[in-house]
Image (cartoon, rainbow, N blue to C red; front, side, top):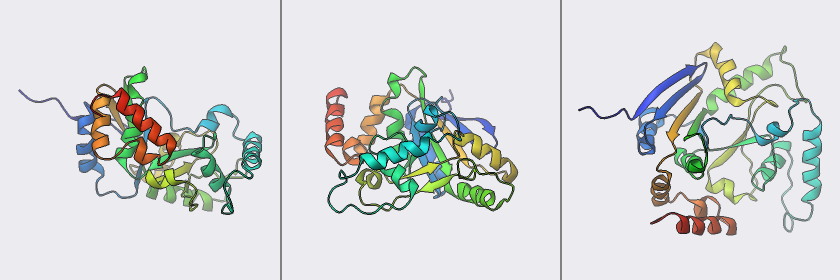
Length: 261
């Protein structure tokens, strides 16, 4: 009697390949087999596999040309005056301001990513069973492809700016020491063109290059507690990913909620 398939390659669209796992237990095996030697990939977990790669700000502001984005950032810059501690480092770039806000609850045009597929799996699984879709997912994005496509777009004289930006995807790695969460999560951000789902952007430009730039790994939500226990044994939990009082509190809540956590 043959054993069930551990994963199934699903539809391939442009530069996106989807894999469907039969259980979270095979996630590590898939990473080892398909992505272990591809060091430029970064990962993002979604508790609901139907969610788009679209930041929260784009869900609120539907127009790519809206001036509300600028005023939203200016409001944040005014609101944090005197609240960054004594002698805070100077923030030069707009994206670094967005990054500061992202991990402090601000609605931004950024998406969080991590260099660790297992950290992404943790964020996918943490609330997966409370979702109605029945599956979560981990996205894997090639930074090399993002840089290559964006460089060509930036050099294209026919490329039209929207809201002062060409339709590139920026990889944002803040150098500020203010965000210990980002360091512990091995994190970075992407900023795509306003109101453009990142998968659509990848598929649009990968068609010309015939490159697999994005992967979607769909994982059943069932048995998520055992997955979280497994990840905790790997020292992946809220206490390590959020090295502050908030992280310690959520970690203790997990020990209360999940037996033998």
